[in-house]
Length: 627
Image (cartoon, rainbow, N blue to C red; front, top):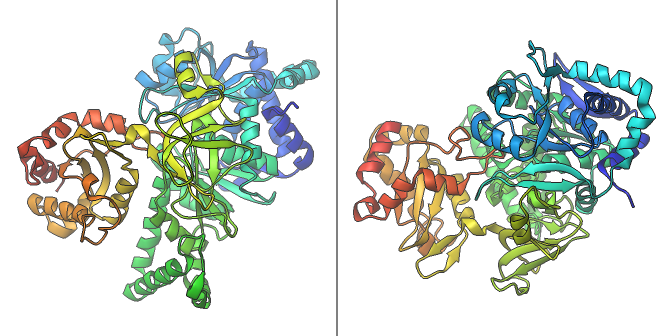
């Protein structure tokens, strides 16, 4: 049966035509666009592309902040039979952007006025790029056309060739390519993941076996729209359910856009938030800061209320079990007098967060669950369009620390190094087979053959299936610590815990590549250190070290991780991992191999007798600069 993105959208327009689909704020308040109106705008955009000479199966890119035009432009180009190449606005023009636009043979690009300078700077190096379609009010150069002008061309084209144009979208088949999404390359160079129309619609159907969205819900998307997770969880699932999608008000700079998020959430009053863990951490910090401002009595009460809620909720799966049922009235009371007010700061309607982009630590999940805004961890990757498993609301359907229950229909196996299937509870590589498995990597048959074997996608992630029916993802194989005896360990849980539980550590990466011991590259929190030790670099180093020693046997968190994998040496650095220096990607994941190559000299030094000492000159020098 034919089930393309066009089919999915057309069916929803038929069912929900007059319902609001898109919500956007460009002036003083959020305004809605219905499903039927969205379709008309998309048809004009698509017909405009055809009028420009764009043919089916040609690649058309989008480089812009998330907004209505992003979604209608992509729908439009899909109606025109083209392939979308969505790009992150965090890419820099000289290298990553140029690579993707050339590699994908892009012939036209939709670009916002904020991003236009990046394209103008490299235009001469892109002979295939014939059309630049610009959003926003800006003086145009040769070869550029405004989105308004394109839509006017489309309107004219539709007046004369409407049926002919609609036939292009109807001719699109399940296996036709919908997007080429470039992986963020946390472990290697970016690869173009080819996702078909059916990959998307299949993943929507599969995801809806785990989550349900009533048609009166509104999703507020903070995640960049170029990511396939935003495509499926952000808008295609909402399309299938007839729900609404709101995007952040676009500012003149990325920082201004980010600053609009809290106010926009209060205005939209969404039911679901689509975010990344890094932003969830900021939300938590803001909540705690506002509680702190209300004085020590309120802060003590809030912390006690959290403690009671943690005890009652346990891991979500065993909530209120055993003697803990007696806490239920107290939890309800604290919810009424404290947590309800926290939720009001998020508009008051939030039923849950969807966290995408990286592993979520259990502590963060416990916090948001306690305040009544559960943060549901899922698991997926671009090559799987991307959803593989998800926690969801409802008894027995979520467990903190897990990646949820596998979507259906989908086959999943855990394999050892020899490719043998492992029993429940044993960890190995996660491999999957289903209609959501990508068509391959663009112009990269060897990488495709290595990753998809007989229809099975080898994820490169380590995990296990629990006897409780939940999937547990432990991290990337390429992120593993490898000891000198060949034993392997996934460091991501340890890194998350150290950042989350220490006010003095902002970022940390553990490293061991068949070395005698593990080392840590540590980015300190300079403000917290200054408050604690002033500008004393040696005391600051000792304070950071004492935080890590808490994980050793006998320490406060001594039971959490094996001693042998804890860092025996610290490389304290004065440069944070950021998108600007390329050490963090567009979904806020730290790019491990880039951090390791960026700080290669510090890693080598940490394996010398001098560098192993905590108070070595390089650590003290970094801390002196920071303090």
